[in-house]
Image 1 (cartoon, one colour):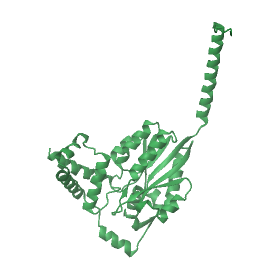
Image 2: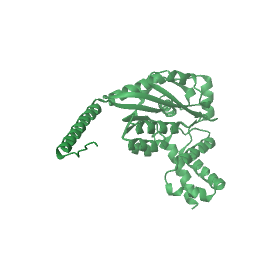
Image 3: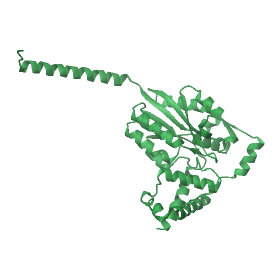
Length: 309
């Protein structure tokens, strides 16, 4: 039989001391690794917002047919600005979110996709040239990278209120989210709830954007601009919001619409997107990049709904 002798006090003390020394060593190694690992940032760019906001600011139109945007130049400018703001951080990549029919790259999107450190992510374009699925792509990427600790800082260039939940989720995983926007003539083009949630906000002015925009003056564009007409007034948008609410009441019933009331003044993301799409069809004008008009649209919707209950 083997003579098994229980560990005495001396053996236990030596074992405890060895474990303590190992823990101290691991602590020093982890601290050194953390100190020497650079922080990482990524940029998430809503191309639809950038085109609309830059076009409006520099060329006086949100229609992409009315101007040429040097996408490579403005992306590089964003990267350079991030380098100055995050001097001790490395760039993971720039995510460029845009729409395309059947999600097939256009020639411009192919050129952007070939740029170093840039990944193009495509949503769909519907018959009215409205982007579909872009916000969900941004939310998915931002949350995933933050959850896996792939980034410490996220630069979000956009303005849609639907991105609030993504910002909150990324912050919950420890990432800081910085909202960048384009100067809006006579108002804002970013949703206030989004501005409230981010860790910092920055606006790029006309002087920053102007070098990357060239106006087009062809007859084809002039005809298209005349057909589209000026942006709708606040009164028109408010009326359409109420009209959509009345249509929903008749189609979906009072009970379904009443379910939205506890969330006032906010609408669920999918419902808000449906409201936007229905309103743009009635107005025959895009409200993308018009955060102020989108708020008026929601106000008109809520005013009619609340008047019925």
